[in-house]
Length: 625
Image 1 (cartoon, rainbow, N blue to C red):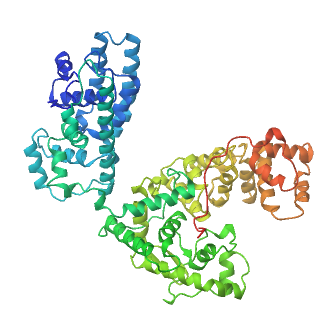
Image 2: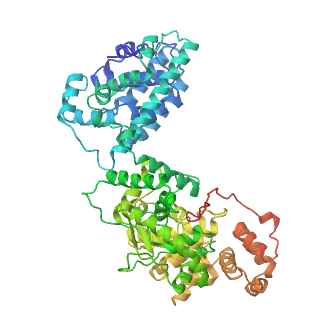
């Protein structure tokens, strides 16, 4: 069954020495495991590929889930083969008892991750998926004619739940590339240092192409003849990248995310829960949207047509809330916009004239957070109309809307953007996924979101836990520990202001009084609600944090900031100097910024305690042109 490829892995000798593993599923597992170990460079001087702690985990958790299909009942054969292999290699004198025990322990430790990876739909390739379907139908995977007959009878099978065709294509492309690289590396390695056990690949194998050799191996490990069929007469059942033109737009959205956060794993806010239309194809919608964006980009048309993809990303990044055409145009024109209003949602009117009009002076001033003159409004009119034209072209896809000055994503647009972002690995959770996060994860994510998105998602998170005392207690505790000692600590604490204080259970607030960071915040809510609270339980550090946060807000741009500090220090044990030291110890970054602005030097021992995370945030709406 080993064929001509990887024929010197010692498979026959291994099976002869382990009769308990000669049943077909175990023999298939042995062929795959020995072959993959050999491809990854395992020493074969004993006649068998010798496992190591690093190799067994890589093969089990990375390689087998990428190239091999096994039914759930067959999974146990793979670690069993590896354990038996350690025994054969020990008998050959190539392992001592201690090394064997370490390798066996590594195998056992990797089993849960191996089983999860094998069952994870995200690891499916075209070959692994079709192998699972034909095996479920009772088709013999070792019979190429039966495999082709099954493919002929199952034209147009839909991907499994939770996956789309592009997901399968992406995973297949990656698996093909990884296996081709492993084959090439093995051939070069053995050409430079031939193994006494004989070559894994012959010149004949390589002369016919590494991709062809990889396909033959995958067929051995999934279903015979499957790769050739999917590359030939049944290629339409396993489309490649050319069948997914929208992935170009997905790449652009990934670039937007990296420009904003610098890391694809930093999550975007989940969109509001919306009803989805099962009659509308998300992939077809993605193709339609991508075509519109590409057409706008390639034309020398409107002022902002080349920013279409950027606008789409910015709408999703703000939590899919509506935006103002005028405000977005003002930001592109480098108007000073109040940072507190940059991501503020815009009310969508029930109806408005089809022709775009810049909002009246009072409304425009409210949108940007400063008094705007009539002359400024007049200057903004041309870019705002150009922005509206770009929005209207996107609205022609059905995935964007504009009503008056307000524009945003339609429910279909939200779904399509969500799909496109995830297609290229951007962390774009849906509402259910975000609701399932623990308190630390949701707060770490929400710290980087707009106020409206953070407020909504935190409320949904608490609602999913029925606003219990336990849920609130976890959130209150995490507010003081997530990002502690970093530049973002103050932003995390600020999320307390996005919570509904009236909804917080008294028991949770009382339990938080002893918290060294959030204790004073909890005490303030209890007092405001008229609830009894023991102020003596609140640590000095928590009181200093609250004073520092209030000082930061109150002294911004005020010439009498020092007087505000002196007033806050009245009655503090040890006076103003002791309060400054406590602030610096509690949050060195905010203390340095706030107190430095008042001409106060933060004690050197307290400065820059901890390490700030390197998260890049360049406002999506501000793009140098």
